Image (cartoon, rainbow, N blue to C red; front, side, top):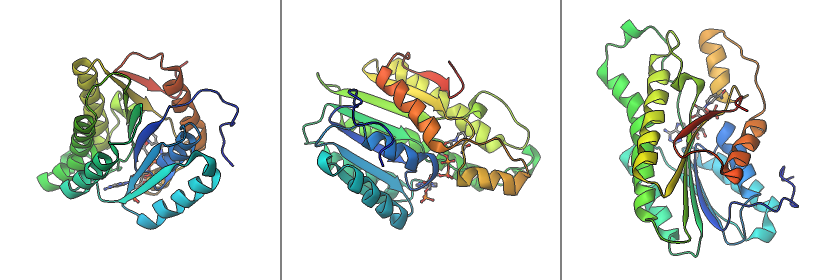
Length: 256
Ligand code: NAP
Protein backbone atom coordinates (compact mmCIF):
# COMPACT_ATOMS: atom_id res chain seq x y z
CA UNK A 1 0.00 0.00 0.00
CA UNK A 2 1.19 3.56 -0.56
CA UNK A 3 2.65 4.86 2.67
CA UNK A 4 1.78 8.54 2.21
CA UNK A 5 -1.95 8.99 2.67
CA UNK A 6 -3.86 9.89 -0.46
CA UNK A 7 -5.48 12.68 1.56
CA UNK A 8 -2.16 14.54 1.66
CA UNK A 9 -2.95 17.65 -0.35
CA UNK A 10 0.70 18.49 -0.95
CA UNK A 11 2.38 17.12 -4.05
CA UNK A 12 5.60 17.39 -6.02
CA UNK A 13 3.52 18.55 -8.99
CA UNK A 14 3.28 17.17 -12.48
CA UNK A 15 6.88 16.11 -12.44
CA UNK A 16 9.60 14.14 -14.06
CA UNK A 17 11.57 12.49 -11.30
CA UNK A 18 14.84 10.67 -11.92
CA UNK A 19 16.12 8.43 -9.12
CA UNK A 20 19.51 6.77 -9.44
CA UNK A 21 20.15 3.56 -7.53
CA UNK A 22 16.42 2.87 -7.47
CA UNK A 23 16.63 -0.93 -7.62
CA UNK A 24 17.31 -1.48 -3.92
CA UNK A 25 17.69 0.08 -0.51
CA UNK A 26 17.07 3.77 -0.05
CA UNK A 27 16.50 4.50 -3.76
CA UNK A 28 13.72 1.93 -3.91
CA UNK A 29 12.05 3.41 -0.82
CA UNK A 30 12.32 6.87 -2.40
CA UNK A 31 10.63 5.63 -5.56
CA UNK A 32 7.67 4.45 -3.45
CA UNK A 33 7.40 7.73 -1.56
CA UNK A 34 7.83 9.94 -4.63
CA UNK A 35 5.27 8.04 -6.70
CA UNK A 36 2.58 8.80 -4.10
CA UNK A 37 3.31 12.52 -4.36
CA UNK A 38 3.21 12.95 -8.12
CA UNK A 39 0.31 14.43 -10.03
CA UNK A 40 -1.32 12.65 -12.99
CA UNK A 41 0.80 12.62 -16.13
CA UNK A 42 4.09 12.56 -14.23
CA UNK A 43 7.10 10.53 -15.29
CA UNK A 44 9.37 8.47 -13.07
CA UNK A 45 12.78 7.36 -14.34
CA UNK A 46 14.32 4.55 -12.30
CA UNK A 47 18.04 3.99 -12.85
CA UNK A 48 20.28 1.11 -11.70
CA UNK A 49 22.15 -1.83 -13.23
CA UNK A 50 19.65 -4.55 -12.33
CA UNK A 51 16.87 -4.46 -14.91
CA UNK A 52 14.99 -7.29 -13.21
CA UNK A 53 14.79 -5.45 -9.89
CA UNK A 54 13.74 -2.22 -11.61
CA UNK A 55 11.03 -4.02 -13.56
CA UNK A 56 9.70 -5.55 -10.32
CA UNK A 57 9.63 -2.10 -8.74
CA UNK A 58 7.83 -0.63 -11.75
CA UNK A 59 5.10 -3.28 -11.44
CA UNK A 60 4.73 -2.59 -7.70
CA UNK A 61 4.43 1.15 -8.28
CA UNK A 62 1.97 0.85 -11.12
CA UNK A 63 -0.30 -1.41 -9.11
CA UNK A 64 -0.47 1.24 -6.35
CA UNK A 65 -0.76 4.30 -8.55
CA UNK A 66 -3.00 3.16 -11.44
CA UNK A 67 -5.21 6.24 -11.30
CA UNK A 68 -2.19 8.56 -11.61
CA UNK A 69 -1.34 7.43 -15.15
CA UNK A 70 2.25 7.47 -14.03
CA UNK A 71 4.76 6.72 -16.78
CA UNK A 72 7.57 4.64 -15.30
CA UNK A 73 10.80 4.05 -17.22
CA UNK A 74 13.38 1.50 -16.11
CA UNK A 75 16.91 2.38 -17.15
CA UNK A 76 19.12 -0.66 -16.61
CA UNK A 77 22.47 1.06 -17.04
CA UNK A 78 25.82 1.22 -15.34
CA UNK A 79 26.34 4.81 -14.18
CA UNK A 80 30.07 4.23 -13.84
CA UNK A 81 30.21 4.34 -17.65
CA UNK A 82 29.83 7.27 -20.04
CA UNK A 83 27.24 5.28 -22.01
CA UNK A 84 25.14 4.69 -18.91
CA UNK A 85 25.00 8.38 -18.07
CA UNK A 86 24.40 9.43 -21.69
CA UNK A 87 21.59 6.89 -22.22
CA UNK A 88 19.87 8.18 -19.09
CA UNK A 89 20.07 11.79 -20.29
CA UNK A 90 18.82 10.74 -23.75
CA UNK A 91 15.77 9.05 -22.29
CA UNK A 92 15.00 12.09 -20.15
CA UNK A 93 15.36 14.33 -23.22
CA UNK A 94 12.67 12.28 -24.99
CA UNK A 95 10.30 13.00 -22.11
CA UNK A 96 11.12 16.71 -22.02
CA UNK A 97 8.36 17.59 -24.47
CA UNK A 98 5.76 16.56 -21.88
CA UNK A 99 3.88 19.29 -20.10
CA UNK A 100 5.53 19.15 -16.71
CA UNK A 101 6.08 21.75 -14.00
CA UNK A 102 8.84 20.15 -11.91
CA UNK A 103 12.01 18.23 -12.65
CA UNK A 104 13.43 16.41 -9.64
CA UNK A 105 16.74 14.56 -9.86
CA UNK A 106 17.77 12.41 -6.90
CA UNK A 107 21.43 11.41 -7.10
CA UNK A 108 21.26 8.41 -4.79
CA UNK A 109 23.41 5.68 -6.40
CA UNK A 110 26.76 5.17 -4.73
CA UNK A 111 29.14 2.43 -3.71
CA UNK A 112 31.11 1.70 -0.58
CA UNK A 113 34.49 1.02 -2.16
CA UNK A 114 37.40 -0.63 -0.51
CA UNK A 115 37.48 -0.04 3.26
CA UNK A 116 41.12 -0.14 4.13
CA UNK A 117 44.10 1.95 5.24
CA UNK A 118 45.04 5.06 3.29
CA UNK A 119 48.55 3.69 2.57
CA UNK A 120 47.19 0.69 0.69
CA UNK A 121 45.71 2.80 -2.15
CA UNK A 122 48.71 2.62 -4.46
CA UNK A 123 46.73 1.72 -7.59
CA UNK A 124 45.46 4.90 -9.30
CA UNK A 125 42.99 2.92 -11.42
CA UNK A 126 41.15 1.72 -8.32
CA UNK A 127 40.88 5.25 -6.94
CA UNK A 128 39.92 6.76 -10.29
CA UNK A 129 37.24 4.12 -10.92
CA UNK A 130 35.73 4.79 -7.52
CA UNK A 131 35.69 8.57 -7.93
CA UNK A 132 34.49 8.29 -11.52
CA UNK A 133 31.29 6.55 -10.44
CA UNK A 134 30.75 8.23 -7.07
CA UNK A 135 31.66 11.80 -8.01
CA UNK A 136 32.05 12.38 -11.75
CA UNK A 137 28.95 10.52 -12.90
CA UNK A 138 26.71 12.48 -10.49
CA UNK A 139 28.17 15.75 -11.84
CA UNK A 140 27.80 14.75 -15.49
CA UNK A 141 24.30 13.34 -15.06
CA UNK A 142 23.14 16.45 -13.21
CA UNK A 143 24.68 18.74 -15.84
CA UNK A 144 23.03 16.72 -18.62
CA UNK A 145 19.59 16.89 -17.00
CA UNK A 146 19.92 20.64 -16.34
CA UNK A 147 20.83 21.18 -19.98
CA UNK A 148 17.70 19.34 -21.05
CA UNK A 149 15.56 21.37 -18.64
CA UNK A 150 16.87 24.89 -18.91
CA UNK A 151 15.44 27.65 -16.76
CA UNK A 152 11.95 28.70 -17.83
CA UNK A 153 9.02 30.30 -16.02
CA UNK A 154 6.73 27.85 -14.22
CA UNK A 155 9.38 25.10 -14.18
CA UNK A 156 10.68 24.11 -10.76
CA UNK A 157 14.09 22.39 -10.89
CA UNK A 158 15.28 20.43 -7.85
CA UNK A 159 18.45 18.41 -7.40
CA UNK A 160 19.07 16.14 -4.41
CA UNK A 161 22.44 14.70 -3.50
CA UNK A 162 22.19 11.71 -1.17
CA UNK A 163 25.05 12.39 1.18
CA UNK A 164 26.36 10.97 4.42
CA UNK A 165 27.67 11.91 7.83
CA UNK A 166 31.04 11.09 6.26
CA UNK A 167 30.81 14.08 3.93
CA UNK A 168 31.71 16.06 7.05
CA UNK A 169 33.43 13.60 9.37
CA UNK A 170 36.68 11.72 8.72
CA UNK A 171 36.76 8.02 9.56
CA UNK A 172 39.83 5.79 9.51
CA UNK A 173 39.93 3.34 6.57
CA UNK A 174 37.04 5.09 4.82
CA UNK A 175 39.16 7.38 2.64
CA UNK A 176 37.32 6.60 -0.62
CA UNK A 177 33.79 6.94 0.76
CA UNK A 178 34.56 10.05 2.87
CA UNK A 179 36.38 11.73 -0.03
CA UNK A 180 33.59 11.10 -2.52
CA UNK A 181 30.84 12.26 -0.17
CA UNK A 182 32.80 15.41 0.77
CA UNK A 183 33.47 16.17 -2.90
CA UNK A 184 29.80 15.70 -3.80
CA UNK A 185 28.73 17.99 -1.00
CA UNK A 186 30.96 20.77 -2.33
CA UNK A 187 30.01 20.03 -5.93
CA UNK A 188 26.34 20.58 -5.20
CA UNK A 189 27.08 23.70 -3.15
CA UNK A 190 28.78 25.15 -6.22
CA UNK A 191 25.71 24.28 -8.29
CA UNK A 192 23.53 26.13 -5.78
CA UNK A 193 25.80 29.20 -5.99
CA UNK A 194 25.77 29.17 -9.78
CA UNK A 195 22.13 28.44 -10.42
CA UNK A 196 19.76 30.39 -8.18
CA UNK A 197 16.87 28.86 -10.12
CA UNK A 198 17.80 25.34 -9.13
CA UNK A 199 16.91 24.17 -5.61
CA UNK A 200 19.77 21.98 -4.38
CA UNK A 201 19.78 19.77 -1.28
CA UNK A 202 22.39 17.42 0.13
CA UNK A 203 20.56 14.99 2.39
CA UNK A 204 22.33 12.63 4.76
CA UNK A 205 19.80 9.84 5.36
CA UNK A 206 21.19 8.29 8.56
CA UNK A 207 21.97 4.59 9.11
CA UNK A 208 19.45 2.45 7.21
CA UNK A 209 18.86 -1.24 6.77
CA UNK A 210 20.21 -1.85 3.24
CA UNK A 211 22.67 -4.06 1.37
CA UNK A 212 25.30 -1.36 1.83
CA UNK A 213 25.00 -1.79 5.61
CA UNK A 214 25.20 -5.57 5.25
CA UNK A 215 28.46 -5.05 3.35
CA UNK A 216 29.73 -2.74 6.10
CA UNK A 217 28.96 -5.39 8.67
CA UNK A 218 30.64 -8.11 6.59
CA UNK A 219 33.74 -6.01 5.89
CA UNK A 220 34.24 -4.29 9.25
CA UNK A 221 32.22 -6.27 11.77
CA UNK A 222 30.56 -2.99 12.78
CA UNK A 223 26.81 -3.21 13.16
CA UNK A 224 24.87 0.06 13.45
CA UNK A 225 21.46 0.71 14.88
CA UNK A 226 19.56 0.75 11.62
CA UNK A 227 16.24 2.28 10.67
CA UNK A 228 13.95 1.25 7.83
CA UNK A 229 14.62 3.17 4.61
CA UNK A 230 11.00 4.36 4.51
CA UNK A 231 11.51 6.44 7.65
CA UNK A 232 14.38 8.44 6.21
CA UNK A 233 12.69 8.65 2.79
CA UNK A 234 9.64 10.21 4.48
CA UNK A 235 11.85 12.89 6.06
CA UNK A 236 13.36 13.75 2.69
CA UNK A 237 9.88 14.06 1.16
CA UNK A 238 8.85 16.43 3.97
CA UNK A 239 11.94 18.56 3.35
CA UNK A 240 11.16 18.76 -0.35
CA UNK A 241 7.49 19.54 0.16
CA UNK A 242 8.14 22.17 2.84
CA UNK A 243 10.89 23.64 0.66
CA UNK A 244 12.18 25.74 3.56
CA UNK A 245 15.89 24.91 3.24
CA UNK A 246 18.47 27.21 1.64
CA UNK A 247 19.69 25.91 -1.67
CA UNK A 248 22.98 24.04 -1.23
CA UNK A 249 22.22 23.10 2.38
CA UNK A 250 23.46 19.83 3.88
CA UNK A 251 20.74 18.38 6.10
CA UNK A 252 20.96 15.23 8.18
CA UNK A 253 18.07 12.92 9.09
CA UNK A 254 18.78 13.69 12.76
CA UNK A 255 18.69 17.48 12.30
CA UNK A 256 15.60 19.22 13.70
P1 NAP B 1 22.67 0.02 -1.64
O1 NAP B 1 21.71 -0.81 -0.89
O2 NAP B 1 24.04 -0.50 -1.88
O3 NAP B 1 22.00 0.44 -3.05
C1 NAP B 1 22.78 1.15 -3.98
C2 NAP B 1 21.96 1.41 -5.22
O4 NAP B 1 22.83 1.97 -6.21
C3 NAP B 1 21.36 0.14 -5.82
O5 NAP B 1 20.11 0.42 -6.39
C4 NAP B 1 22.37 -0.22 -6.92
O6 NAP B 1 21.68 -0.93 -7.91
C5 NAP B 1 22.78 1.18 -7.40
N1 NAP B 1 24.09 1.18 -8.05
C6 NAP B 1 25.26 0.75 -7.51
N2 NAP B 1 26.23 0.83 -8.43
C7 NAP B 1 25.66 1.33 -9.57
C8 NAP B 1 26.15 1.65 -10.86
N3 NAP B 1 27.43 1.46 -11.19
N4 NAP B 1 25.30 2.14 -11.78
C9 NAP B 1 23.98 2.33 -11.46
N5 NAP B 1 23.46 2.07 -10.25
C10 NAP B 1 24.30 1.56 -9.31
O7 NAP B 1 22.87 1.45 -0.95
P2 NAP B 1 21.93 2.27 0.06
O8 NAP B 1 22.33 1.89 1.42
O9 NAP B 1 20.53 2.17 -0.38
O10 NAP B 1 22.51 3.73 -0.19
C11 NAP B 1 21.84 4.70 -0.96
C12 NAP B 1 22.53 6.03 -0.76
O11 NAP B 1 22.46 6.41 0.62
C13 NAP B 1 24.03 6.03 -1.10
O12 NAP B 1 24.37 7.26 -1.67
C14 NAP B 1 24.70 5.87 0.25
O13 NAP B 1 26.02 6.38 0.25
C15 NAP B 1 23.77 6.69 1.12
N6 NAP B 1 23.81 6.38 2.53
C16 NAP B 1 23.43 5.15 2.97
C17 NAP B 1 23.43 4.88 4.33
C18 NAP B 1 22.99 3.55 4.88
O14 NAP B 1 23.01 3.36 6.10
N7 NAP B 1 22.56 2.59 4.05
C19 NAP B 1 23.85 5.87 5.24
C20 NAP B 1 24.25 7.11 4.76
C21 NAP B 1 24.21 7.35 3.39
P3 NAP B 1 22.32 -2.04 -8.89
O15 NAP B 1 23.20 -2.91 -8.02
O16 NAP B 1 21.12 -2.72 -9.45
O17 NAP B 1 23.08 -1.25 -9.89
